[in-house]
Image 1 (cartoon, rainbow, N blue to C red):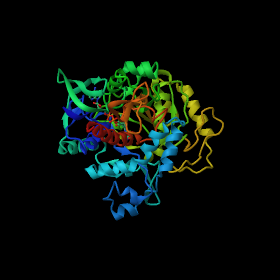
Image 2: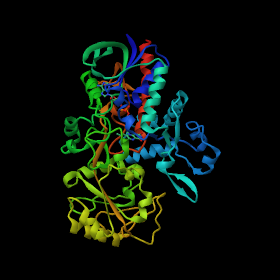
Image 3: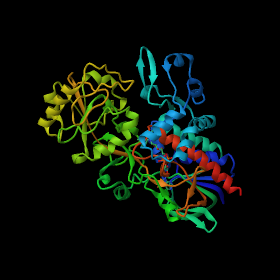
Image 4: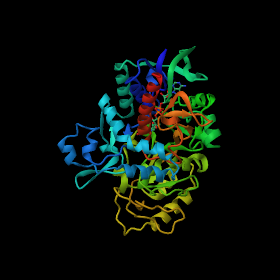
Length: 491
Ligand SMILES: Cc1cc2nc3c(=O)[nH]c(=O)nc-3n(C[C@H](O)[C@H](O)[C@H](O)COP(=O)(O)OP(=O)(O)OC[C@H]3O[C@@H](n4cnc5c(N)ncnc54)[C@H](O)[C@@H]3O)c2cc1C
């Protein structure tokens, strides 16, 4: 008999297990994946975590080893709880659950500091979230801290810490269903290396991820066409945790037809590849333009900072003819392109003139593409200065699809274009929980002994999400779920 069983082996699950172990004796983690593929989507991340902080002193709770030179050379600014709350409200179009969102925001820094105290190391995301201005790195977009070693570093570190804390982890152990009676949930049916067994526990935490790797559920809930998307991360998040809880009477919550989806290498494999990680993503579109198969722009590439648009633009690409688009840049912005543009596995063309460029764009109406680029160039308000660090207001005038910031003309060779499609990150719909991370039943009361955290919880993210909130969400509610489950196990 275990005190707490945690289903899942990613960030939310491992944080739940560590938190449970602070109060409970026997804690078991069930990870469906074999050890070499363990860690869920969390392993695929860059390890970026969105936390509210009021300046470098608070940031030092996570990154105590910031050197005086690093501090002098960086403008970390601040990202207040109010800004984080505003960002959540704005990007979710005011649908995010207010109570859960408040917990997410207010516990973001203390939870990351708790992880640091357990032994997870963080650094500042100089490479990804800062630009050099007058010799100093200026951070932007509220996303400053990342786990050392990115997602793999985060998962490996949490796994090691869990091992040292005496937490058992079973790999290749797929939870099949919950064991329950009139008093609530009391264990899990598991298929472990080909054998089915019933494992008893006093409480269960579900942290088994969303349903994005299940093409049938994608089509059923996200809508027709979603079976055509590529999966950015793990192949193991097929909605098992959600299904098990719904079967036990849990209430569904949140944006079941919504998901996080981004621009992703057009010829990437069906699921994520750990050797490439998140590098198939192509996030520098604010510095260029998109063209679809009809040779037309279809989205405001500069509507906001990348952090606030990238998660919803994958869907827009999926809606284009043949579900793909080209991102086009000229030499003026080449130095701004993120590292992911320099990997080997890209579908890329280069050209010395716009005419040559459009001739190389596979599957595109070339004549229209050339007209579109020229029309776009003519619409750029060149008297407004370009500044990648702020929403510079350098925009187009008079186009049906405007570009609101960072509108540079595309006129300086060599030109580059990258082919992308839609890569789904995670589904937004899931289980209803309360502030103690208890899973609520469809009759309204909590299901005794059942807790949930991470991707499979619904109600927090809708339509879109502020980058770096996924790991924070898993950590904050994982920690709460683990503590609640451990308390329940002691009743
Ligand atoms: C390429 C990529 C980059 C990303 N970058 C970032 C980033 O930088 N910052 C950020 O905050 N977020 C990022 N995200 C989102 C982030 O990965 C997720 O929000 C977060 O990791 C979810 O954590 P989780 O623990 O809930 O799920 P996961 O980490 O996916 O863990 C789910 C676990 O459940 C296991 N599982 C599934 N079914 C079962 C079952 N039946 N039995 C037992 N185990 C099961 C899986 O094997 C897995 O271990 C990124 C996602 C991807 C795909």
